[in-house]
Amino acid sequence: MGEEVILLNAWPSMFGMRVRIALAEKGIKYEYREEDVRNKSSLLLQLNPLHKTIPVLIHNGQPICESPIIVQYIDEVWNEKAPLLPSDPYQRAKARFWVDFIDKNIYADGKKIWAVTGKKLQEVTKEFVEILKILEKELGDKPYLGGQNFGFVDLALIPYYSWFHSYETLGNFSLEVECPKIIAWAKRCLQRESVSKSLQDGKEIFQFVSEVRKRLDEANIRRNSGSASGGSKCQESKVGRAKL
Ligand SMILES: N[C@@H](CCC(=O)N[C@@H](CS)C(=O)NCC(=O)O)C(=O)O
View 1 (tube, protein in one colour):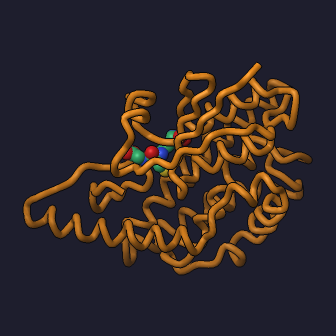
View 2 (cartoon, rainbow, N blue to C red):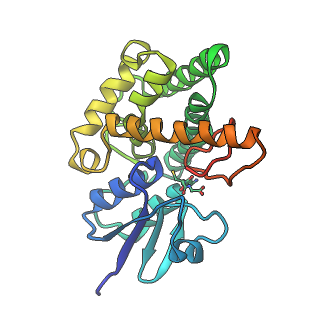
């Protein structure tokens, strides 16, 4: 059966990287379409009208939204190769729990690192490191968060490695010092071609972050002088609501 697989994505997105890793793990060929999240295509708005976010996977014309759901869909549809979720229901529930934990905490704290300065930045950075330490404890001496094999939880967290350099630079801390096991785990994950080919260079992400921060500062100045612009969820700042 001829399959049509299209991915709507934006290159710096940690959520999009998850989907790229999952597709690479399964060896699925797909068409990649880069979206500009400040000027979304009518296709994206039509296929994800509620959230209007990337990534969106289009499989034989049907859209699937939200990265954890897309990854689980990929695992279910292409189930003959490289299982990503455990087959045991309890282990599967645990994996979902940790992905939910990552989504609720890592993304939120990473976002705050962008937005604050001074004492608040120190607090947020401490919180971010604490969350990673919880994940480090969960990792323990296992090679992967998924156990002996690379899986759903690894795939959900590893894209943040591309962002670590930005968080460390802005927050002035070292994850190599704070969470050495997480860094060793990340390097282990990077040995997989699916991961190394899907992650983005940390310095390029930092460049992107710097440009977005500059735009946010400019938007704040405009806001304070009376005119505001709309928001975007890739890294929406609490300081401003500029489109990123
Ligand atoms: N929970 C979503 C988050 C997706 C998301 O926030 N995507 C950002 C890019 S990183 C986006 O499309 N932002 C555009 C906007 O919010 O307007 C997922 O896991 O897919």
